[in-house]
Image (cartoon, rainbow, N blue to C red; front, side, top):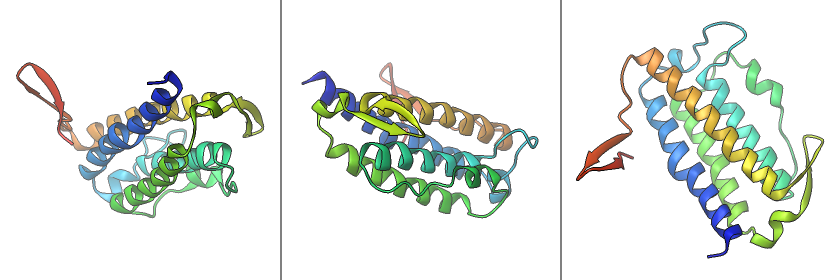
Length: 169
């Protein structure tokens, strides 16, 4: 397999088959109040982080890589203090990731070197996709931490079978 194609396919898999299910399990453990809890005004709630992830992937992949209009209102992702339930937030994120996956499924490895301007920065498509995956990973970890903090329980992502760690999603 071509390295470029492997990078695109692995990025798609991380977003939809690794990070999203973990976020789902983290949110399922919480009430709507806990989803919107924040320790202080300088911090974000899980609700803010999910809105932010949906906005970020749409801006960087669907618009930035895919060329669709950029309709993002970034500040609104952080200003929200209540609103959607955990299930509604997950549906919103899933919809964004489906758009991303559609964009990436049509991306060829030869396009990875192409230039784009996203958030006023000149980047390659590879740079943009790499940023999205690492950014999504960072916030997934924050969501998991907040969920464990609020629920007081292990989210049990993995089980060991025959000496191998197997995901439970």
